[in-house]
Amino acid sequence: MFNELKRLFTTALSLSELEREIAMAEAVAESERTGTAFPDSTFEDGYIAALNFVMGREGSNVREEFEALAGEHGQTT
Image 1 (cartoon, rainbow, N blue to C red):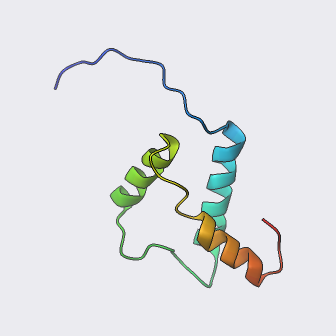
Image 2 (cartoon, rainbow, N blue to C red; image 1 turned 45 degrees about the vertical axis):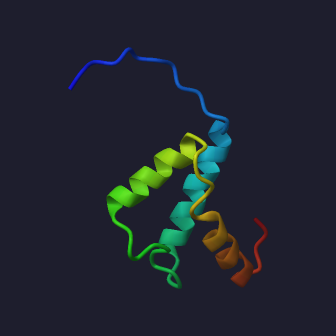
């Protein structure tokens, strides 16, 4: 493996947006209704999806599930 020059990485997402994404993922994971929103995915698939989200290559993987869950409980997102 070769050494790459370390470069500063920035993302279009704010820290609060990333924290919100984590909170949504935790709520979906803790939900009795869903258990996991992605039963056919591996840990590695989730890790890759998270990195792609942070890099702006993919949208949120949990927002839709979270909003459905919040709607069932009459909460606003």
